[in-house]
Every structure is written in structure tokens, then in C-alpha cells.
Image 1: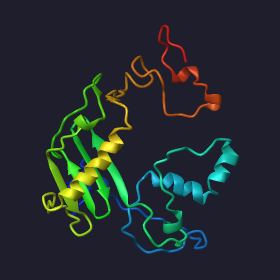
Image 2: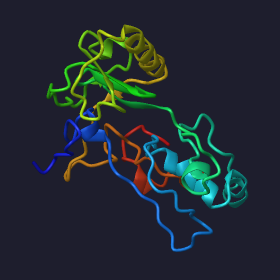
Image 3: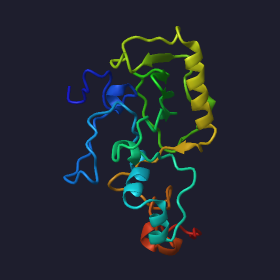
Length: 228
């Protein structure tokens, strides 16, 4: 089908590797900027491009000098420039990925090293209901249904080894639980052509960085008694 990522298992909107794993490449005509590195199987998360590109552009010192802002704290982005671009680092900068937590479908996934765990019914289709708050806590995931794969040796995710490696399952579950402890509830609010952001339910048009942190009138919903 058009959503197939064969030979990887799964498809778009799936937590199997066929739904989350994509090819990527870097290219430059100037080899002084980008040293040819061949191919790699190291993990690179999309969030890593932020720190990587900042470093290529001069680093966080240049960022602070040009923007007048402090670098973000607790940034979930790993600088991969030494590995991907200069070739001065030989080990993989990122060794684990919190793939996704979906409180609507009750599914979650986490990767660490060779192992990838998936919790919940990965084939369950359930839509987010508008106006309902979905809590991010231990109750939002179906922990009873579990699959564990060695995605290095079993890239098609064909052999569930959860019963063989229960310790790995518990360690990856704990990583997800720790992540859940930092999250706020999610409310489903989907914009439409006739009822887009900002509106009475979501009065801010975010995320944007406005000068002097002043949100302009066009980015807020004119709600009686509401002030920015």
C-alpha cells in the first residue's frame, strides 16, 4: 500500500518501525563543512536537528549573542554534529528514544540500545474526542499487552521476546513511567476551516515568539473578560 515502509513492519500512524523510521541524509558540495561519512545505523531523533544545526551555525554562544536569549534548559535535543558532520566522534551520541505515548489509544513505545518495547494494542483505532482531557500518567497506557523486539537483529519486528527478557521490559517501562510523571494532561482540540485557532477554547495562537513577549490582538480570541 501507499503507507508501506516494507521490509519494516507497520505503516503510517503506527509505532512499529515502519511508522516511525525514515531515511535521512546530509550533503554538501564543500567537504570542509561536511566530511563524507558513508552510512550509519545510529539513532537520530528529529529533535536532534535543533541542537545540531545550532552548533553548525556557531554554537549556543552565537545563539545567545544574536538573540539575546539564554539557551533553552532541559532541551530534549542532542548535538550530533561531531558524529554526523565532522567525524570526530566514533560512538553514537543517542542511545535511546522515547518513541511515543498515546493516552487516547493507550499505547506507548520506548527504544534503548538494541531493544524496543511496545505497550498496548497497536492495532486499536480510537479517535480523540473533543473536550475530553486525557491524563498522562501510569493509568493511560495498557501495560498488560507488551511486545519486545531486538530491532538490530530483527528489523522486521517479527519475534516478540518479551517473555525471554522480562528485565528489559521492566526497565523500558520504568523509563516511560518517569517520562509520564513530567507531563500535563492532553485535551483534544482539533482546528477546522471554520473554527481554527485561536478560538474560545484555545484563546492563544501558539507556539510563536512575539517581540517583548507581547501577544498581538490577531493572535488571541476576543473573549469577554479575557485579558492577555
